[in-house]
Structure formats: C-alpha cells, structure tokens
Amino acid sequence: MMKSKKSERTELNQPILEAMRKCVLLQPLNDEQFEQVVQTASATQLPKSGVLFRQGEALTDIYLLISGGIKLQRLAPNGDEKVLEIIRPGKTFAEGVLFSGGSRYPVTSIAISNSVVVGLQAKNYLRLLKDSNELCIALLGKISQRLHWMVNEVDRLTLHSANYRLVSYLLSHIPEDNNDTTGFSLAAPKHVIASRLSIKPETLSRTLKALSGQGLIQLDGSNIELMDVEKLRQLIKLET
Image 1: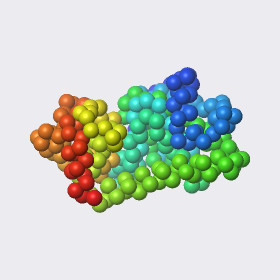
Image 2 (image 1 turned 45 degrees about the vertical axis):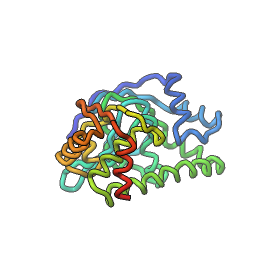
Image 3 (image 1 turned 60 degrees about the vertical axis):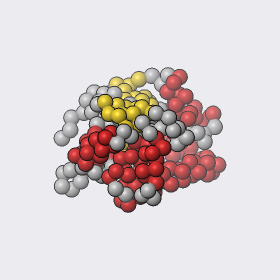
Image 4 (image 1 turned 120 degrees about the vertical axis):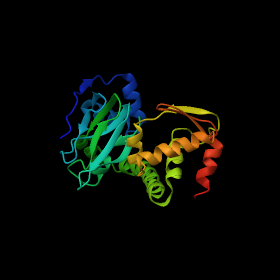
C-alpha cells in the first residue's frame, strides 16, 4: 500500500481567501454564505507524493487546489493505476461525488508537486445549497460549463490520435487568444501525463520529439516552449 507523506495545516490567509472567492463553487455565494464556508474550511500543505484522500474513504470535504498539482487516479481490477485527471491551481475536485449523493471518494488524490489545497466541509456546503434555490440555480450554470468541458474531454480521449491529445493538452496551458511564443512547466511527470491522455509513455516521448523536430516546441526537461501556437492549433483542427 502507498505510504502517505506528512501533510500540514496552514492558515487561510488573504491570497487563499481571494482564490476561494474566485472558484466556481463559491462564486455564486453571497457574503454571508461565503463566510459560513470559510468558518469550516481548512487549508493543507501537501508534499510531493502526499496523499490527500484514498479511493474508498468516506467523503468529508470537497477541495480547491490553491497551488501545486494533484492527480486523481483509480485502481483498476488488475492492479494498474489509471490517472483520470490532473488538477491545476484554481480548480475544484470531489464535488461530483457530493452532488451525486455519493458517500465515498471513488479515486485517490495524490500531490504531484508541493501543493496547497483547501478543504470545504461537504455537509456545510450541501446545507447551503438546500437552503437556497437561487444558489442552486446559479451553481447549475457554473456546473453546466464544466460538463461541456468534460464531454469535449471524452471526445479528445476516444476519437482522436495521440498527437491530437498531446497538442490539445499543451495548448490548454495558454489563453485561446495568445499566438505569441509561450513557455510553461509541465504540471506532472511525463508518465502521469501519458496516463491522463490514455497514451503510452513511449508514444508521448516520440510525439514530443516529433513536435520539437518540426520546430513547433522546444523541450528543456519539464519546461516546454510553444514556438508556433497558431500552427499547433491548425494541427488539431485537421482532426476535428
């Protein structure tokens, strides 16, 4: 069994509170409702490879990632670990279990770098929803946007080539209206990204090298620079 690295509680400081106010699940709350959430929320520092929760554990909180990176993985019957999602800062996770009436986490959550997460007490958040129809309707709008994203993600993972999946993933790191040279660091090790994209690690490496050979990207360890954003976008348009 995977051993958990030690996590530590940290203060809900002003930058964390500001990040909470901007997150999808908390944007529709009025000031009083937001304060009620804050009173029962807690922030945790996770070291790299630290486990936030395990598959099958009782659901107690839904989460917002403040910094770092989190992978959500599920253990298959044959013992293989499949990465279902890589969470980036500003994104929430585990709320789907709460909204569907689930009582246990269906995945394991592991930090892929030193991370800070905020836990929002599930029962308290659900109570706020039950007490306000207006809040529920506002939240439905936010959740529907995320649902559209998930449908598109299923299409990317089932209907397109490994090249499309990887290029689409790289482009997801930058704004849609940015056509300039853009650099960033990969949010996870390459084998984790390969699992997330449902491609083999060796295929991911070959595709990265091919894109580099075409002068479309530059590689420097985990750092990637997109040299021709518009051409990369044209590559994935050919498969849509």
